[in-house]
Image (cartoon, rainbow over all chains, first blue to last red; front, side, top):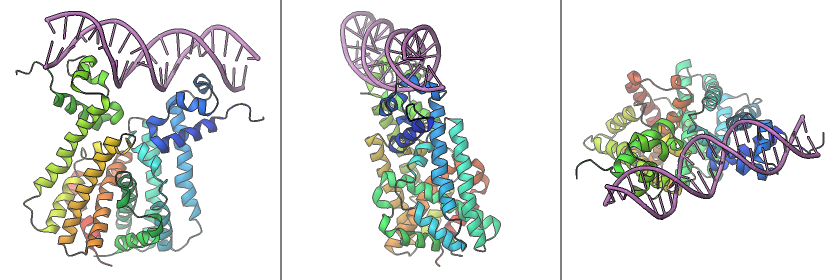
Length: 187
Length: 187
DNA sequence: ACCTGAACACCGTTCAAGT
DNA sequence: ACCTGAACACCGTTCAAGT
């Protein structure tokens, strides 16, 4: 079991990297193969086709950018602090969201759409629970969670078009606080 | 000058439709050509290459989904009413945003990135002015405009993953009002 | 069990030749 | 001036043949 032959995960990781860098279109078997020291023919021993590779990459992304982040907040009990911590993670690290943005436009592939729905439900649910814990009613918590999550996705996108329009890492805490103030204000 | 030969706009319109439907990847010269009753060879009489076609489509989109909407609100003087009207346009019509979403992941093409930046500035600027008209200070107006616009883009995306999570057309007014309340609340 | 290399399909691009 | 059709490049996919 020495590392002589390629593991499917090697392909998946390389695909995820390519996707974050240049979008779904950048996941090219022919380009990836030499990077991994293999031929494109050998790829088809590990995967049925290109979309299976993309799916494997999406699963890695799901784990790293949804489950792992939610897990890291498991021991934060206060709901407001939970939101503040979450916001200052997701609105800051500029590499977060690259894959989100890449997947958004890949709505022609049903498996990707399904994964996006899964991730959306998980993320919005997590935020909703925090708002509910803050005392907002069910519908109001859901609505505000949708605002927060929609805003996250939207800002990921805006950052691509105009990097200046979104908070720099050093003002992340202030951004998170300001957003939290607006989203928890009652008119 | 009868409609014997194809006008570049015919290609651009067809490309925009394809893009809204299936993303940038769906803009295929080979597929579009028979639709327009032409050969793919003839395409290259009108356009330098495929990316020039995509750019022409983007320009149509810029006019239809940014300038035209802003123009339609020119005679609404009250800033709050302006925002309310804007929100109930952009958060309702489900066909709005299809192209936004398609372009978002096409960050490999500099011309598209440039167009997105132009549109972002125009849209955020318009919303910012309305918030400023409402009495918010410059920085605060800018920040809230970014929230509103980020939310628009984000919800376009969420709608793709989970159509149920976003307001249906019939509750559009209520959604616009609710959002406006949150975004104008002061904590 | 895993990989190579040649073959083919699909679509972007070019261009000589037609009207 | 505008279009056709054949040619070629690029990359996904298959598969017989190698180790």
